[in-house]
Length: 196
Length: 291
Image 1: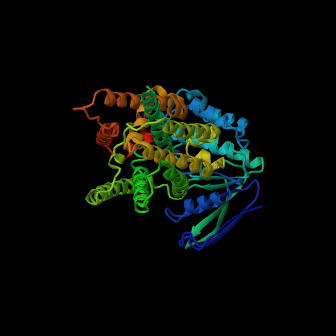
Image 2: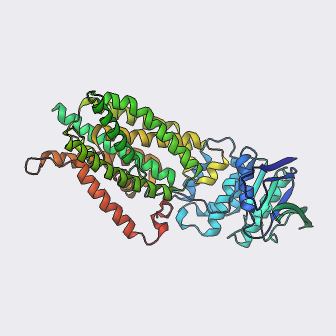
Image 3: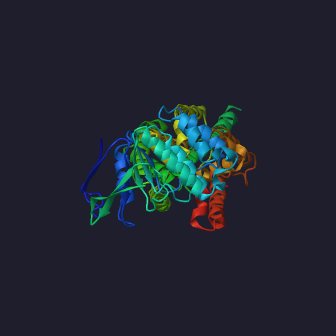
């Protein structure tokens, strides 16, 4: 069981300055709440303090300096000599999102959904115990959402924990119950649990 | 002949170092308007040299480049470390650029006032500090420049993988626990010390750190990513500065040599205005819109 906590008196008074929640290996937890309530800020803070444990897929699109083809980006990522990069998973996700058919496309020419898929390939192929995804389905088409759901399912079955910030959970097809934490009235409350 | 060789080599290495410091700063901040000039490193170096120069005069010591170096290099290493921590914590580069430009204006005003007072009291003043030139090049300067260049290249080679990872964006580098402290410290120490060394030896070449990297990137070097920019592009820019300096050397105006720093600053300032003018909106001046 992993405990994620923030204990900082200066952190987001509208969320609370002493927040913690528990998550088990193989568990999917969604974080819900109104817009602007502080979900992203809270989750980014958790991730910043637990980089060895967590891989984060941020909400914003990745910025880039050199305009390169997808093939070149893939080479750089895979040749980064970081032992944390899981080559097999990366190649699998790369093919699942059909990025292998777009190797010659430049980064600046990618659509929102393609850029999102690239971002997901980066963050989900890094070996960590917890994967935090902040609105991962944004811009994705139905096919890609289905692929993402399969990938998340695969991660859960290998014992990884997933924290998801998502307003629309209808695309998640996972044979397990999903529980939600809600930020309301300045604190985290245990929300409902449902079967997908 | 030895003078000309040291002058040519100095101008080449100054062009190379300015191009490299500009590339490093634009790459790490992902902003085309970031440079040693626009972030205030030029102004800080000039101010520091002015203060040291004045102190040396008041304690009746001969002005010595050695003393300025012994005191200056550690100071500017600290400045680099401070700036890297500032970047890691805040990353509001646009605000820092505005502050740096304003600081440069302030130093310009202080420079003029200082010059007025020194001339009034009949004291020596390094007038040409504001516009660099290579008239007093010697082999000592060449050795110092080559050392700085070797350190920049060695650091870059040692951190090549980290640079490659950072170029993929913040997300990949954060998730792979990239050591931002180490990388940013190297980048900003190189920028800070490189700028100080160039200004201390030859004076300021404002805006070159801004325009040279853009020139390098506009050429085909962008396909080599940072390797092309820091090695081939920087070498080309070194040759370009060497060529401009040769023109100044061989074609004096009424017997007086025009400082090469004056020419490149004027060209750089006009280029900066054009870059800003051609940008339709705020985003287009950011590097992630290069196509």
